[in-house]
Image 1: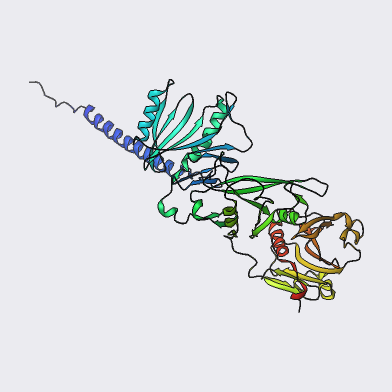
Image 2 (image 1 turned 120 degrees about the vertical axis):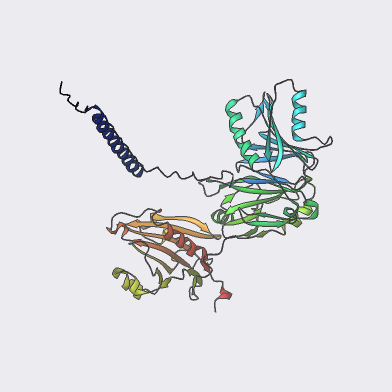
Length: 507
């Protein structure tokens, strides 16, 4: 009998179990590592913060064309002009630029107004044009002034058609046969179209007052001027001092609604001057017309002086001249900005007959605020008055001084009364209709900017001087005008308040 031996268990199943377990552990470790890396990578990646680009309103400083009768308005570039061809047609073009089609003069952009007799929609009018045209016509619909509109583009022109309250508004720009010109005009066209809006009834309730917010003035119109328009042209002139300097400025025209090219009604032309330009006018040193007399002043605000041209009425056959004169009498200069010098202190010297304002936080003849090298001058001076800010904005020494001296020559010309080389720094100008001299003297880091005024009797000079010493703190270099802009602005404001006191004002 054979002995039976029990066989040993095979090792294969055990090996498989071990292998499976190892794979599971490895996969767990792998996914754990991937998760860890992904988490850390996500944490390390910083996505850039994208800020929206600033929105620039390119039409913010454009002029506004407003039509009260048809109840709409839109903006057009400052450099452009418009012409009222008729009650139902207005043409726009860039100033001093010619537009033509096959050598025939034309407009750049036109608006045509009509009654909607057939009671059609804008799209139906566009389709009718397409059906009658011998050229291909593209049509698209859009919204203009919160109203449904249709736009057609063909070989001859681009036209936007708007229908509202049984009226048809067509805004058209021709095909000039020049791709560059077409592109530039149509860019303006699109921007003008984006500003188009209908005027609600409550917006026309105060139509009688024309207010110009850019230059800050207003006039009150007559009932017969309902539906008036305005346009901006320019005046130009030349100085008479031998230099023949050229000047140019705006002329705002308020136009009678009855005005057409075939029947001219009197405009109201309002000339706008800066204060410096008006000083030249008053000194008879700026000629803007062939007339022997200058423009007549209407009024002024903080920034501008307004005037009517000489001979603006009575020298042609324009209709309605009396009406225009009545309206001109209602002119009023206004200001949307407060007078920054209203709360300033007033320095008044009755001995010398002068008055000037200075900032509230500046002090007069405050010795201890001045640098040591100036203290003795402040104490001992009888003909100088010094004003100094309590808080220094820049490290340099800054102050304003007023000095008075009797005239030594018959014409009281400061250039004849100072020594060389200081004399060469003085140039002549005008201010408030009076003779004025300007000196910008610089020496070893010290700058003295002076305005020298002479009284009417030519008996005394008044020097208003802005001093900025120790430029760059090393006595050699000078600060630029940009670096001292706040000081220059304050000095100009001080200068703007200066006046000689009339004899009856002096106690």
